[in-house]
Length: 453
Image (cartoon, rainbow, N blue to C red; front, side, top):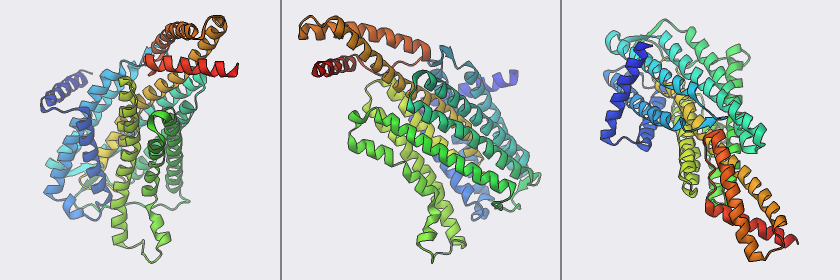
């Protein structure tokens, strides 16, 4: 415990010093994406570039990307740690998460440092450290995604909101996918040798679909696919809440563009349309590996960009911040989720991306929970404003129309502020409906009631 406190304090002071170099959240995100993309790309073609990876330049490249990753992630975790204190679940803070995240960061950092020390001093690394890193990263991922699933489905039972149930089910499937990935990678690594060095062969294992690991791999891919589909549906419903602000073109662009992610994942269909291409050739495998890596990154960026566009259309700064953070989280999550180290390259390219899996889930938890709860509270608030407006119309129907509208706007605004405080006390998140939007909504309800008479 004392060692953890000392290490975390030292890391915190070092990261805060980076503010002098104007390290900000967007720049830290860019550093993370660049380092992880480089890590993924080299990992996926490590059997083709074995001479490079095992050279001194390859080791230096691994060190540099690791350094950039841990600096940027440490900065982002410190930033998000202050933000997550502001939100609550059923009136209570996420105290357990606030303790687990820094501890996981320090533990993964130590394990990665041990790998680096082994590579530079011993010129080999023990595979047990890959297993430990995978276990911690995906263990954190499973915990956070299952917790996100629980709180979103809990709110759905209270609010009965399609956005919450879709995102909640997506998180549930992502939890199962994380468990299966942990089982698969862990099982494969246990069959490897005790250590890996520059003389070790880089082999991507292929398993018979009828074997246990083959079934686990296919099941995991299917579950992850359905998790993405439910996430896509949930975000489409979320974007629909701002259809008028976005406009038809932006809305369709934001909803349909994430499908590019799927196109990238199933790039092998090129062999179906162009049968003259030999999919077993080394050149095809090489280019497929390169394109697969970039399609995953680009597809996830396109997915996250939808939230950034939506954030620009929202006037409330808090909700805009939630949406931006959701975009960041989804980019990191869907990028890191494709990483693997079952081929045990030297140095272990791919382990940096795997280390991101748990931390990206932290961003997804914060962003999706905050933005979906804020928007579901907006829907709830509007329903209650409607009921309050209708009640006041019936009560004050005997006075003039102009006076009626002014009187109802005043009374309903007072009621709306009380409801807003109740919702904020329960979740720690303020609904994004502004005073001006409340008055406009009250006017539209009054007009709707008047037209029915």
